[in-house]
Length: 102
Image (cartoon, rainbow, N blue to C red; front, side, top):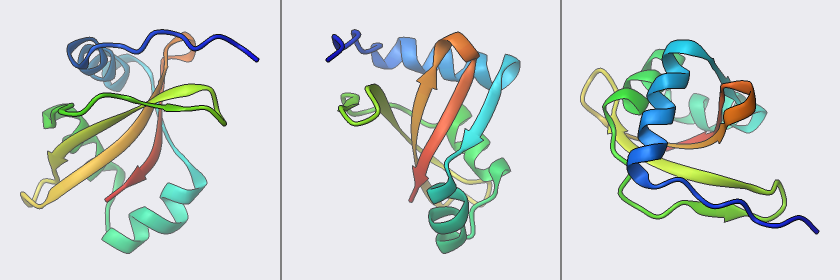
C-alpha cells in the first residue's frame, strides 16, 4: 500500500492544468470518449475551453483504486452551456487525464 501524496490546492491545480494545456498532453479516458462525451455532444475543444476558463470550487477527491487525486473543473463550453470536467493531473508526464465530463 502506497502513501497518499498531498493534493494540490485549487490555485496550484489550476496553474498546473493551464501549463499542461499549453505544454503537455490531454488524454481522455475510454469512458469519456465512448460515453460521457457522446452523451453530452462534447468535443475536445469544449473540454479545453472549460478547463481554461473554469474554476475548481471543490476539494479534490482521492481515487484509491488508481491512487491519484481527481480535480473537478466547473466551467462552460463555447456555447455558454455548463460543463464540468473531472481530470487527473499526471505531473511527471505533463498529462491531463480526462476521467469524465457532464
